[in-house]
Image (cartoon, rainbow, N blue to C red):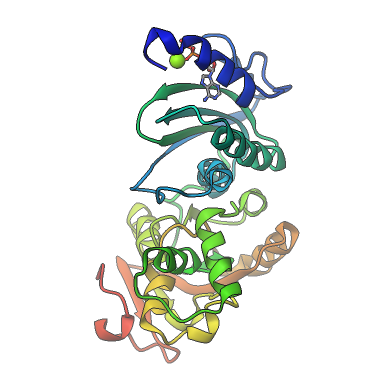
Length: 326
Ligand code: ADP
Ligand code: MG
């Protein structure tokens, strides 16, 4: 932290909350830089996500969940690349050094890191408005990463898990338009928002099967649009196939739910494409990863996303329940 008086506090804070065993690093927290060894034949996959209070999370969010989420969104990027997460750094700006907050925050981060074999090897800590920036480093066999630019006409479009829960969770917390969920369903949606589960095992299992992939952080339609642009293709998606959770399925006709399925961010599911002939491999990979996957459409020549009903008729904008694009 800046300001001479804080130096002792800063180092004991780092030692207390952010210095964990890092057996797979040659050198972890405590020097000017960490030293890491990438296995021969592997590419290093690197990604950063910055979470700022008031922009990416609500003030007063449970610190344990915040620690989880700061890492989860980065693990999700590794999942989307088919990379195995190995190491992370944490840049933290804190308004004050509150022990209870730091204990819960570092606990949430550490628990998720432990589950994914990811070691915290460095970072930076400063005083300022609350913001959390994790950089993650992962390994992927050279040439095998799941990129956004590999989708081909004829491929099928898949999505993991369920969509829209996080957006409805946010609507519930902010008092925006949301269906009348019971307490358990509401808690499930809020948990999706605050403690998303990155699909790391699925990303690894999809290597060699998926032709393109990304994680859904801005909303299904917008994120699939990135694959289409980078791959130079179009897609046709059957809206009724978009997977809804048990919490949201009873409200599938509610405009807020329709909009959340197509456009809600923060779900951190994987959207990916695969050749039609690989459908059985996709299902096997998903079963191996313990994740549900749903085939929602197909890649077509051309550009842009067409949304269709069960009979293949293109939906007019009014029936999309969504007009942020197209
Ligand atoms: P420097 O002055 O070289 O930037 P710092 O004093 O900021 O070093 O940090 C000391 C050590 O603690 C470094 O190894 C750094 O990577 C690590 N570190 C600082 N903040 C964090 C944090 N929030 N999480 C993990 N490691 C951290
Ligand atoms: Mg520093």
